[in-house]
Structure formats: structure tokens, C-alpha cells
Amino acid sequence: MIVISDTSPITNLAAVGKLDLLRTLFDTVLIPPAVLAELEGYVSLPPWVEIHAVGDRSVVMRLHAVQPLIRLEELFRRSPQGSRQKTRQPWA
Image 1 (cartoon, rainbow, N blue to C red):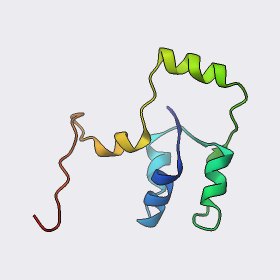
Image 2 (image 1 turned 135 degrees about the vertical axis):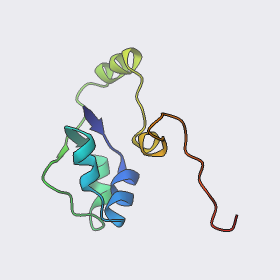
Image 3 (image 1 turned 120 degrees about the vertical axis):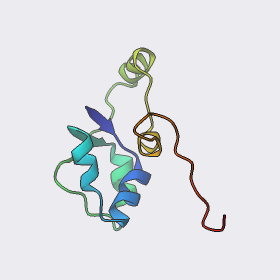
């Protein structure tokens, strides 16, 4: 499966030393140049993260109409059964 990531999943996984989890879960990890610019100075990207610019936005819109996009954060928030995990507050 191919995933297009934004900045948050990469920085958060890198912060806890689990950036390789993306490689375990997905065959291909893509980021746009804007994400690369946001990551500069914060995260050293492994060579398996590919940088690709969108060449034709109309293709993106057509793909989105056929297969709705799932935010990467949503994948990490879901339990194996597919339901949202309840986040426990430290003070509760």
C-alpha cells in the first residue's frame, strides 16, 4: 500500500524512535516537497521516504472521488478492530 504522509506522523513517530513503523505498515511512503521543507532541521528522513510533487491536481481529485483518502493519523488512532481507541487522560 502507498501512503502520502504529512508532517505530524513523521515528527511524532521520529520523536519516539518508531519512524520505521511506517516502512513496516506501507510499501511506499511519499511526502510532498512542502512536508520536506517543514521537516528540515527536525527529522532526518530515511532513504525509503520518497519526495514527490503533485503534477496534476485533477488526477488527485479523480482518485479521491473513487477512493476517499484516509488520514495517516486516523490509521494510528484506530484499534485492530477498526474502532477508535479511547484516549485516557493522565489526570483521570
